[in-house]
Amino acid sequence: MLAGRDKGKRGDVTRVLADHVLVAGVNQVKKHQRPNPMKGEQGGIVTKEMPIHVSNVAIWNPVTKKADRIGLRIARGRPQGALLQVERRADRRLIEPTRER
Image (cartoon, rainbow, N blue to C red; front, side):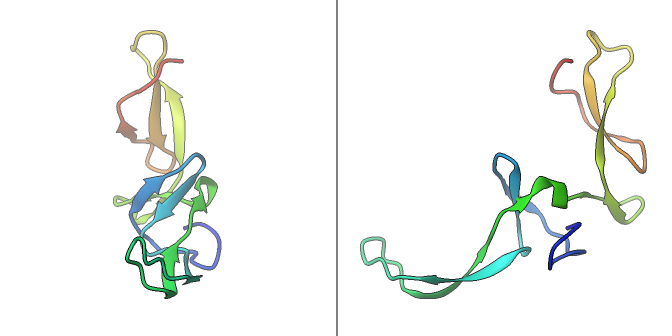
């Protein structure tokens, strides 16, 4: 996490939405939930993870032991200049190119 009340916490991304992500153990809120007998759910106060905007999340770099941003570079020697995702700090490639420029 880069910002917010959970700044500095780390967790795994559990779900990706349009421009938000759900991170395990981060941005948890308490929600008052009504009982739903049709689904067999009890009512009460439930702890729930809420989505975080992708600009407030960074990738953990195990080499530098710090959070790192992601950038796009044009791959040399690839057909039609495919894009690569690279870490900004270590300048190392993350995954193979998935889309063409």
